[in-house]
Length: 116
Image (cartoon, rainbow, N blue to C red; front, side):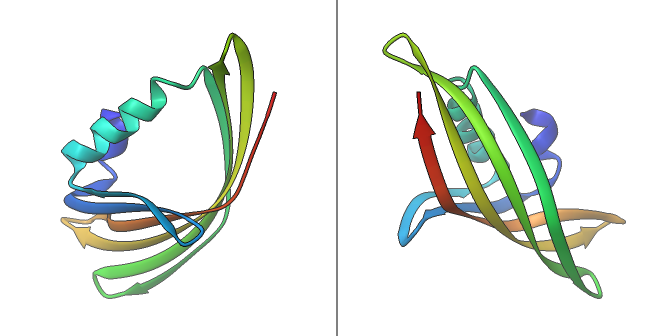
């Protein structure tokens, strides 16, 4: 997860919304890495497919929207449970020393479907 943190500014914010419910509100890459590692520890395997990524650049700032399909397998009561997530990410980015970094990300989990 440390490699992923290089995509964010050190003071980045990351929010996760499940409908109208704010499920997570994390500030800074140190806290974000701990959050990601905590979730990853519960996952046996996962698959992510990203698409429909649009970006609007305005000098050294940008806004973007991307969509992702995520499948995660976790174990519950000795059985594998697969959860499908349909996510819309809304990003605010800055260009710092020639590198684009995410300063703010909101993950809107639109569909969450779990099954054995």
